[in-house]
Length: 240
Ligand SMILES: *Cc1c(COP(=O)(O)O)cnc(C)c1O
Image (cartoon, rainbow, N blue to C red):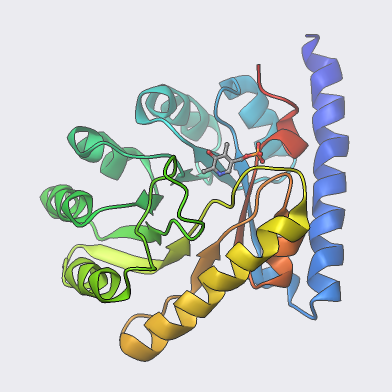
């Protein structure tokens, strides 16, 4: 692929995505400033990420710590203002690297991982921003807490909230894959309702973020209150 051509495509893809986000926000009567675009750059080379950075993208999402570490170092050296989100499942043994490289870990999916991250954050003297990943659809293939088991979920949440070196900023979910955004919408609504219940149950936590919506369904997610959308293919093209 010719790089210059790719940057041209990247630019028009970004314009389209930003326009669609703006339109979705407007239809929902929401402030565009309340919606953060995370460009999911997994499998995308550092050069292309830097090109996106030059086009004004500040937030990038990666799903594997090994792959991300080197890319983040490379990109940050030239784009120090870039902010990094871990959106994929994190194994406890990689908690240390994750805490060092990422600005927000969106995929906290167990109490033990939260505790491991908190310990790592304490060791490097930071308070690690995280989201709690929730498996709203209950699909067996997906990571995340099962909110259907309400008592257990609230008990686990209480444990995570007691981790001193974590800054819990809200919830993340992945809707079932498929190209029909109307099918995803009830899952996004369920995450918003869960957030409202958590706000009532644990009012000391702000629960400010709802990270939901990807290439195929981000408009539905914005309609249901997404504050973070994670978009890969619509920006960088199909992954190999
Ligand atoms: C890959 C990925 C995305 C982006 O998906 P696209 O369909 O490419 O927009 C978002 N969130 C997570 C957790 C992902 O793994």
